[in-house]
Image 1: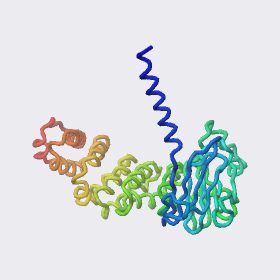
Image 2 (image 1 turned 90 degrees about the vertical axis):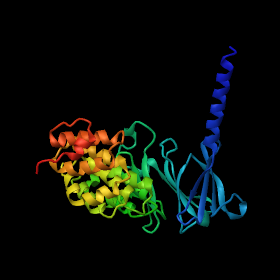
Image 3 (image 1 turned 135 degrees about the vertical axis):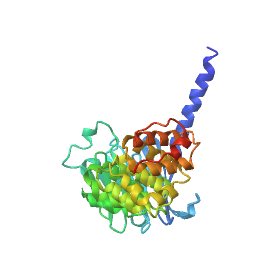
Image 4 (image 1 turned 180 degrees about the horizontal axis):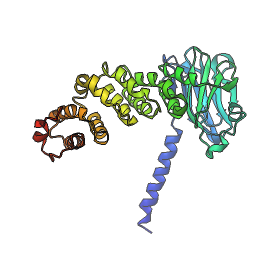
Amino acid sequence: MRRAAPLMTAALLAAAGATARADEPVRHVSPSGGHVLVLRAGEGGTTVFELARGPHEGGDAAVLAKGTLEGRYEVAVVLDGEAAAILFDETTRGGEAAVRLDAAETGGKVRWRVAVKTLFAGTDFPMRLGRPHWRRATWVDEEGGHVVVVAVGGLVRRIDLATGDAGSGTAELVLEGLALPRARAEALEAVDECAGTLAAAAVPAVAALAGGKDVDGRLRRRAAEVLAKLPSEDVVAAVFKRMKDADAAAAGALLHAAVATGASDLMALMRHREPELLKALDKRTGPLEWLADYFRTHPTSEAVRPLQAALAKNPRHPTLAPKLMGALRTCTGIDLGEDVQAWLRYRHPG
């Protein structure tokens, strides 16, 4: 029994830590930083909120409204143009999908609520999910005056920002979200969820994010992942268009997307963009490994020279060099083993 005591103590500490993390406040800031919403879990399944004029350091002077809401809300979008916020319940347990909290006109009370059953009226969603979490992506278009909600399975809904009136949305709302800097991350998740419906229509905008030099690195990588899932022959063409001006990170993201499609015409990327591509990827071996894997399964004699050029720059790399030689083996139809210099001296006919 003495040996069990430390285990019980550890379990209690872990539980206490989990409770503390669950009670930690979640801070949401408007795009300009002018308004701040702080949420934390309250007792009995409630949410305690403070809506403040930012930046908020915790003092009462900046607080515009505070109180308690029925239900648990962690996801929120804080508005810039008004002292207000839209809060989302990601589950069906509370019955509400979204609420608008407005400090300017109602002193911190809810202006409108939209129930899950109202948002998806006329459908068997979300009952058919068989699980409580229904939300995939949500964002607010302040200028357009609406809230966009995308559910698991690709259902798109629009909520009027002023009145809370809810109705069906269109795929165009998702594409518009990609153009909103603040909504891009959520809109990408919506594109992923609606990939079968959007297909080619989403390719230019997603490729622009994957290849954008001014786009956050994590967002760029996510855009490349989503781009690779779009069932469209336009993906590789979009990669060609963006590759020339892409920096190394963007080039890698774009190449990842192109390789992931398994497009048989990826060789066109090497024909038209080889100098820029190899220069961009000079210090990034990961994308070159993707390229080696691609040409190992899609052999073509046109890939021999680019593969040799990559091998010349990375002759001793422990993982890349073997992959490049494996790709050369399938593209040439000969086997020079693991002799790097022999592969570099080799001249393919034609």
